[in-house]
Length: 238
Image (cartoon, one colour):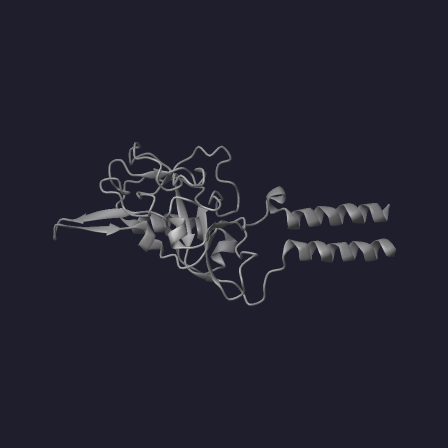
């Protein structure tokens, strides 16, 4: 009986470690396949919603940063968080418009991962070429943002991460993407349409500043399984 109980408990523990989605585990903040010392970025979609009435990029950055700060695993990274978005602010005193383009605003210089250890893009050019390797899709807690892929995210950007004139955030009808659930290869994750009013409330995509893979790599699931199997073998022998 003791052996059966031990086997069940150990199996449940291994499932939790190997299949985070089954156990509702915390977000994965260090990509398992990245080399120690390498640079990477993390992206997530907000669980909260906001209108797009502000033309100040700082508002959207603060929105995604607040969600990241509320998640202990992301707060522990001590990095900056920015919205993947574009704005245009008109300065009446000078008669000029300050444009913020998403591609330069987030300044990606390495691969981008979602919070389930999947590579979204290998770099900036790959992120803004209309195709993503995997969907951003997950919130700061690591949960699926919308399993039906029906929510929208404000972006104010075209597929290349550039501000769209008169459709930036803060404009009357800003550009929006498709909840990071748009099919890969279409660019819908960032440039779906501009037929929604800025007073509607949608999600935002957030991305970290540059992060570095620790020199001591995080154990891969196969190593955890091997370790657990060894413990089980010793317990059964006893």
